[in-house]
Amino acid sequence: MATTAEGFDAHGIGHHDDHAHDHADHKPGFFARWFMSTNHKDIGTMYLIFAIIAGIVGGAISGIMRVELAEPGIQYLQWWAAFMGGGDDLNTALHMWNVFITAHGLIMVFFMVMPAMIGGFGNWFVPLMIGAP
Image 1 (cartoon, rainbow, N blue to C red):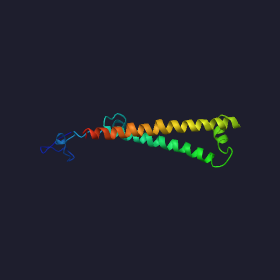
Image 2: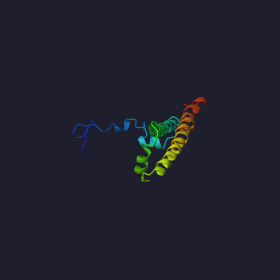
Image 3: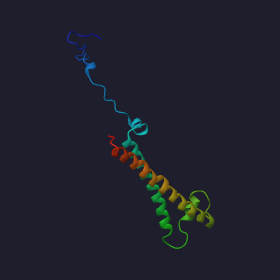
Image 4: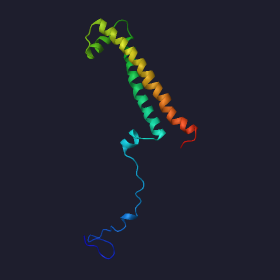
């Protein structure tokens, strides 16, 4: 490409000062920031987001159980058992009740409370208490 004496190419576009721009500000992309982070606030935020999602799932299971207990007898568990592929008889519906109780307890304790309290708030507040930025 032909360059004139003033540093412009034939189309009048200057290219001689590209080296003067500061390219030191390299922010990581989405994946690198959130999945390869060493920043305690980002890690704590991921724990809190995971705990919120688990709380929604556990709350949905709780809602299903509350709707089932709203009236005497079995209303919805036979449908849930058939939907999950286990059949629609009474024993399968009763087994599904035990599955819901157990899943609700495990999800709420080990996937919501523990990650939120220890992982989320621990990664957010403990480094701040010891003077980390």
